Image (cartoon, rainbow, N blue to C red; front, side):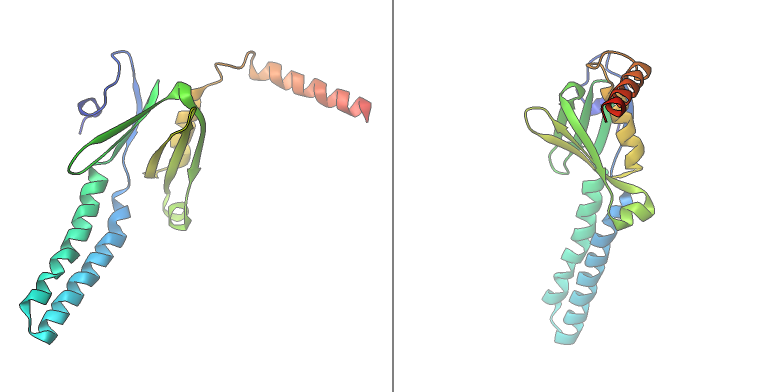
Amino acid sequence: MNVDEWMARGPDETVVWTGRPRIQTILPAVVVGVVVLAGAIAAAVVSDVLLVGIVGIVGLAVPLWSYARVTNTRFAVTDRALYRKTGVLSQSVQRVSLARVQNSTFTQGITGSIFGYGTISAEAAGGGRIQFEDIDDPRAVREIIDRRLGDEGIPGSVEQWSAVLDEIRSLRTALE
């Protein structure tokens, strides 16, 4: 799905990254679905009641719903905002302006660290948060976001601030 189909961005707003959750994140739902389906079929054979086997349909519904949820979730970073679209039966689009983002973090569980996926959270001024769950290479995406945040409110260059830090260190040494 093209981001322009769901994202209400301005005409001069440029998309710098798009993504979605890893499809592999549905594997636990597939395992649960297989176990429920196998259990329902086994119970139907043992009890000789077909109705028990029909409960196995739930075993199919769990991974199908999880797949639909993952494939209908999208994330985007533009030069002005962060976007998150979710929804299977209905659609919800969340937008947080980069001007309002105060802090961004990324987390990775054990499997995320091994397989290279994780979650990014960005906190907005005045409350609120936007999350990009289970995305590939969250560290790189967070760097993209942080670069977009920039240092617009801080005057001077990195070299100038390094010189200030060196001067403060020398003053501290002189005082000690």
